[in-house]
Image 1 (spheres, rainbow, N blue to C red):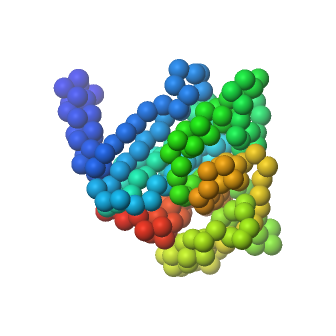
Image 2: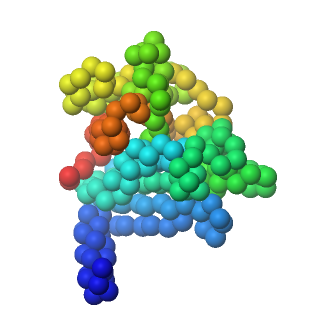
Length: 245
């Protein structure tokens, strides 16, 4: 790519993204650490909820990473959308579930922990505590389909970890499934708390609703990405956040 063309392309991309957001912020969580990871914040012109979408808690779950990246550049009518595409950047770059220890069991983390996963969890928890999103959507994938696991576990499941079920869950699932004609693509909700997981820990510490969304890896990658997008859009609509796309 010629240097002048590259400069023009970068300028156009930055201009388009700036036009999509009333206020745009990007930065690094745990800046300066080997495990630092990027975040992006887009604010619409009108007030509304603060919502977090994240991918890459497990580095080999590519569809969630790709879907999260997509939401970096959506156009918002209202509210604030925070996107962390690669929660565990090191594992995501290597394409492995985790490097040392199961990352999604380390929250809220420790600043002085031996393994970086716990130190990263601590930095992410501090970041979430500062932003306090009303909704957290963590994008995952599963090798199993819920139809093979009694319709309760595996892909096409939205997990929550508190009782009673969060207020927006039923309405969001209704919106999501209305756009999915094939019954095997439909999502169901399962109560399944996991010790040390983002959903349970961040809800307990900061309030709000948090969900882990699993798509089935038996579907093609592009379809899994599309399914994640459908889920995120359904929750955003349920929460009253308007997308211009």
